[in-house]
Length: 194
Length: 194
DNA sequence: CTGATCCTTTTACAAATGTTAAAAATTATC
DNA sequence: GATAATTTTTAACATTTGTAAAAGGATCAG
Image (tube, rainbow over all chains, first blue to last red):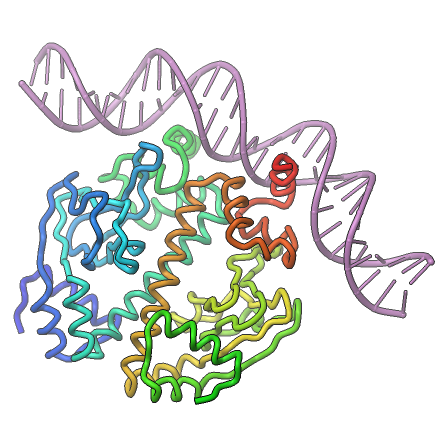
């Protein structure tokens, strides 16, 4: 079956996690939608309740919120990454966080209620999403370990190594808050690295 | 159906997350086992590959590992909490972490391979475990937020507020490393709190 | 009870990070 | 292209946290 390229490439990625039947794939395609968000625009605003799983098909995005009025980046999503505000999607409460595109970005959205409806018919799909969640869980555990036990400098160097593209597209302000430090501190780390 | 009390109370907790059919419950009971670990003893050692979901039915436990030779606590598990070394269970790689009882503790173990076998017959069960994972995911996201954006003092006060029992049963050394700070630093925070 | 061990606090000093403000560099807008 | 707005760097100083070492407490085995 022929899907649009953006969705096709995400589904190809899904297959590396858990392969699903063609019927399940078609059903998933039936509820998936593409949404393009241009650089710096918000896909979702603070205060909305998150009811959709999003994945980045092309581009780069972040989750951020306002902590005492200052913009704080919680998460960067690269190609194929799931980007959800879990504390809202999984609890039904409004989210304090927003999703913003950092480049022109194509998101694939999958409405949670429709997806859960498909789970009854296609257990394969539920398994796929359980495994996606497992993988995200591992990523969060590792990130927490890094926040807990590595210095800011180590975290910065690791980030640059893992995602060199980030530096070219994201302001240092956002990178600093993602690392849990101030811009000034990040600037010092960068200059001592030279 | 009558299960042993420890398993019964865990299953009662499961029902608050997602209720499953009596058949599924019986099947789950069939693969669950109880294991008691006395204070300070290890349920699992470093280096083993984690193949079992554990839950704390009674007592208190932690996940820890050795970072450059020093004991570092990653996680505390209270009653009904899932305690898994996700980076091993979900990837099949050996874990660098160990599980230790901090009081005499009753764990309920559920072998992952048997559980996944049941998922095919009882989609309900897969849903339950997906939702358990969702809840843990939310907990980790919140904990990360706290590590990223709160001071050590705020984190300590929050921990004491959430789990007053922890102080009575756990050495400050473990609490300090859980908070991502040194014992000395924790001691300072405590004395300034007086 | 006693010595040994481990845990906790304290002290003194070092290193890292935060705060505020200003300057420099970059980017956006008209 | 000029100006305004934003981002990044630098500086000076304050605060927090880390390190190492010592002392005081608590706990445990014999």
